[in-house]
Length: 318
Image (cartoon, rainbow, N blue to C red):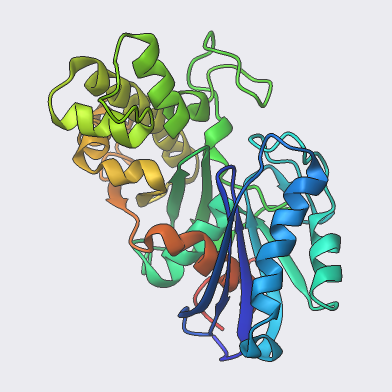
């Protein structure tokens, strides 16, 4: 990749992060605000504007040639709009136009957060060197992206590989997207915690009811917490196996906050994959934790900006 700086935005249901990133993927400056996800669309945009204001105030900003955005989806990269399931105030919100206005007309590239994470992992992480990969973000929601034949596969609107809204339970709970039994409705962090609470798990004295607290309880042997993670792992395994069967991926890389549970998630995930990925050409499918960590969204958004939105371009070849 070339050495210009780019600005990157990572927009999710919990936080809006921004950074200035160089052509080697190094983050030189950071900014962050909580996502006012339950407020109106302009309130969310003001939070984005506050992050951008911190970036543009830096002397480094003059070296920034473009902006890359990785947003919770669905997104429509062709129209420049976003409609994140977990941010109801944004429906067909013209994010690219608004960001372009805020950054003085610099080019803006939009991809889904799962595609951004995939770009990061293919460039610098666990998917590097693999020609066919699925990368997942398991956090407030569940997103994903694909590398096919050595190239980042974004799809016409930037949503290809959005595994979170594959239905794996035909009679399951209604998902905010409108479908039933989606991977996200079972395996996202809030839904892991919801299921544990519904089945009798109770938090400790600190009152922490996050998926991380459920993971800690599972490590301590709490059977309800263990079962909640096992169910999440089954949903992820079913979605991964279906994707692998369809496009013959070699590796599934799992990142996001829920992946921080470690073996509490990965042990039942690998076990469940043995049950779901049964055809000969998917039995050797490898599952790995993501390596780019909490910076995956920013690094991947930067990769998208550095590539300038070129269709089919590889995430690590300039």
